[in-house]
Image (cartoon, rainbow, N blue to C red; front, side, top):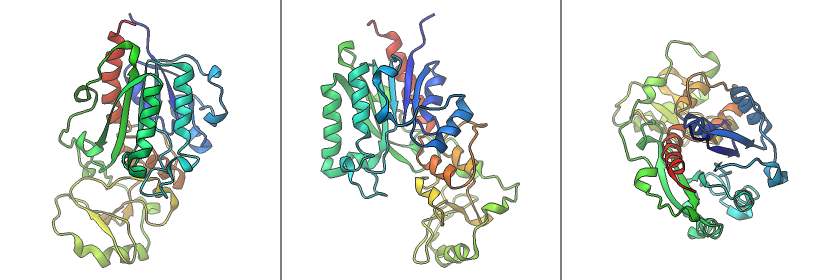
Length: 320
């Protein structure tokens, strides 16, 4: 029986990478996140409290590992932010990944970020990132994948990059590493719980009025329920095709940033949002603003399950 591959979970958040890699029988030997509230959720689910600020952790204190996983902070590259890129301290977190790759020289890595990283600063930001990965001795492939194209009913585009050390002389095939488009496995209708009252998720009369002002925008309804989002007096967007809008960290800022189920006059619950990220039943998370923020910052688990399965198969078959 071959030895288990080891991985580290940087900027671990809710642990989506960990769920995916552990499903491939890999072992997590290190995790890190600076956010204490999400670290507590991580401990509640995995029995391990992540190390804190990665910038203050010496690579000598990180156990040897085979795969680096990192959904590094994306606010500085996101269209929702000011898009300062490397000028923003959060954008420099990629250099922490580079530091660890240089010092530990693992076999491979899997990175995730917002789609906006691909065109930030006219492509110069991504060019710099990829140039560093190349200089560090890794061959890589990259792709933008939408959650709705892998069977999860959420319109969520994210950038994924998979790399492997050049000395293995392995050509990564994007057609194998990245999932092909597939039909939606379920719609948001299937995860909406209409059997409970959920009083605390009921929307205000003002929110309801703002939705009703724009309800005429819905031309065709293909789902049992309609989701309203970006709800403002001057505008409101709707989804009635069974595919949720992108769940973002803004859900944690209050107001009307959590999608609303129009017919039930309530917001999506944290549990429903988790299911729209592909998290397993039974995952434990808190309630309220912090939970919504954590979900919006997280990763779509099934995408990483597919990618990690293919990468792990390659690494187990390599000779070095």
